[in-house]
Image 1: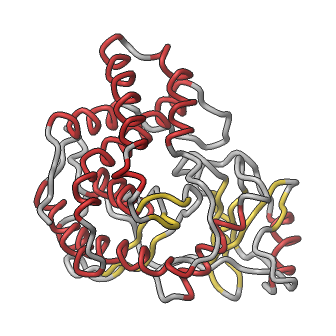
Image 2 (image 1 turned 180 degrees about the vertical axis):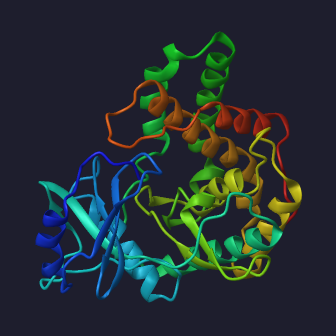
Length: 322
């Protein structure tokens, strides 16, 4: 959620009446994140998040926005995109594709505890169940093909030790994804980026409830266990060491299984998919760090954290019981 495209109040006011909304009372740029331009927009009808997409195309966006609407209408705590009079969810602002969604209440957490991990695990499982009748499919654009294309681009920026790690992991992931066990994994539309800063909690400290899951713009059709691995690698990892915190991981997986029981095959492959998820975010952070795009507000995240997560997932694989 960096700011690459400056949006004026006049530009926003040209769009919002098409969506059945009155004039903008306040427009505030959002500086966190790195992919798209985002603003908080306030109108007499409520508060909204205005997104201008910097990489995704008009043709790609219906999948993400339709997925959000599908989940919201299935009762999940997901923002719902605002359509125009023609029912279109993808709009245009400054010559770029754009979308407007309702702003959910709550705040993100820097340090989730067991209570928060349990709620997130249960919500993730319910979202996986809710996409059973979602009709659209679109590949995970940060899947294995993207990783194989990105690895040689960032490889020259690595020292010898990190380079060996990347090379060896690329071979491991190629074998894993080609295996019969992987091909049989249940899959569907998944978030694929549900970090702690993409969820909101509201309520008194110690008794917060999960009030929102947002930023679906890395979503795609992938395995449910990969989505679970992405979540475990952020919500249940120590930010200083990169090591998995077993009490949080067990709490999250137990809450997930209470809503949707993973198959034995999913649990067996979870350690390898945790490595895939760590590698994906290590590569994207390496690219953002060494090959940054120009933006008015941009704070790329250091890649070392996910190198540590990957090493920990290799050296101390977690094999949860069925």
